[in-house]
Length: 54
Image 1: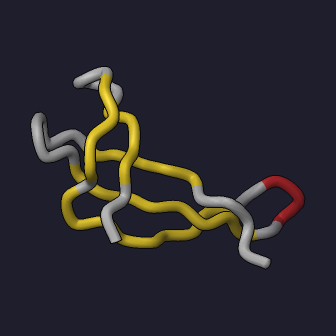
Image 2: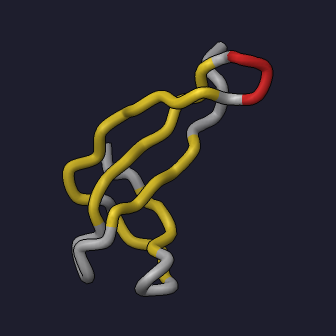
């Protein structure tokens, strides 16, 4: 599945290279899911917060 995220350096939406699902501490002590990858154009790290799992 191709994950699309906004690259801050390119100022455009790009498909992530090497996307990995990660989790981080959210408000209220719960965990939040996110995708982390690399921009194919400039090599900058990209990050996209995913919706809560049901």
